[in-house]
Image 1: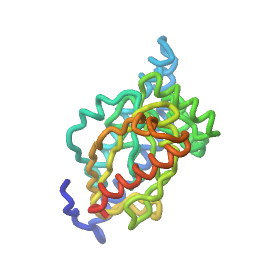
Image 2: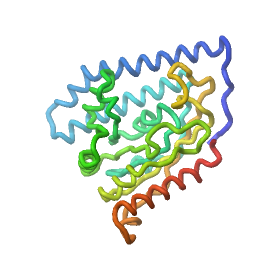
Image 3: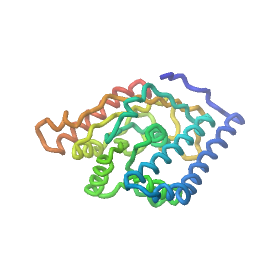
Image 4: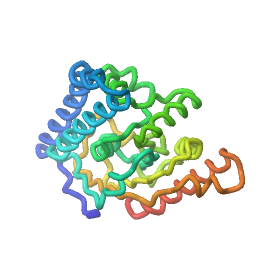
Length: 266
């Protein structure tokens, strides 16, 4: 990854960047609303099996997010690079974990993975701009533990991958990663699925939780995507101890792995 930072825009030079970024927000919101009442319902209810219908919608969302990433790149907000994505393309029915440095992480990941679901917080399901998208695409609402686990099993059994951010929210500025929750490990072990870690390496701060939506990056965020080594659930299933103990150990291992890999990218 090229860690050299882009120039920091100031004064009048920043105005086109800010206007372009604001347009991106508007396009994302209106695009979500319009697609929810036009193309996505057609794809969702077009004849076919339930799995085929969901796959059609997910592929459409994948293409829309791909276009949105292109727009973010064109406006100079981000620049995405990656190595060999074959392992990601071959992934099927796996838990895909990632660190969470920016607001657009899930958009970037779904733009690279057409057969993907994710767990969505309840607030998104009440958002009129995004509710139709997440519902039509078969994404999972973050509700009670048992219902959530049943939904995850259903998604993984039909061969979809499941994106989870173990940090739970965007990384605090100045930290490598936030403390990991055990959700990803619990789902991995209890669904007997393998886990594929993805590293998002950024060379500057932007789209963070500590910044307001209108504080758009003055530097282009270089985001490099690396695919880690698959982590088989059997590695933990074979150990002595119950699911809770194995989930704690897996969470510690996963958090330490991300810290080591991101150590030079603060």
